[in-house]
Amino acid sequence: MTDASAVKTRIAEDIKAAMRAGERARLTTLRGIMAAFKQIEVDTRETLDDAAIIAILDKLAKQRRESIEQFAKAGRDDLVANETDELQIIQEYLPPPLDDAEINTLIEHAIGETGAVGMKDMGKVMSKLRPELQGRADMGAVSARIKARLSS
Image: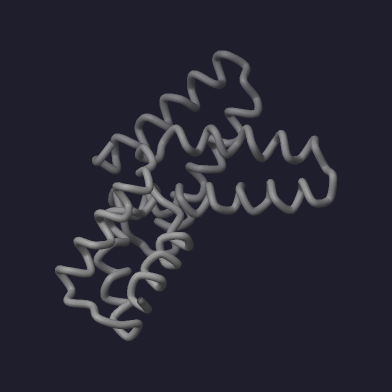
């Protein structure tokens, strides 16, 4: 979905459906997503665009992945299951992830467009790629790939 209002409208409709269906866990997660949107809008006094919504959803997904990792280390399977369920719900609203070949193609294209030749140009490449990859790839892994590519 490219229209920010469409994503928010879809989540609002899904909240109503979850209430009608009595899906408490889904309802809680969806309300948390909407609260994150509203908090950013209040803090910035701006309406969120599609890029901002994807960035927020990506951040929420990353938080869930980190929590899953920590809870798994602590042997808290109940919390791992809860966080996994929330992650799956958040991912429903993110664009489909890119595969490795697509990511590598975008990296090469961005390096070519920016004229990057070394590590000093990494910021240019990342800022070129971020809008295309946000929510569709792990930006930490993308950063590592760019470092490897620019240092060779």
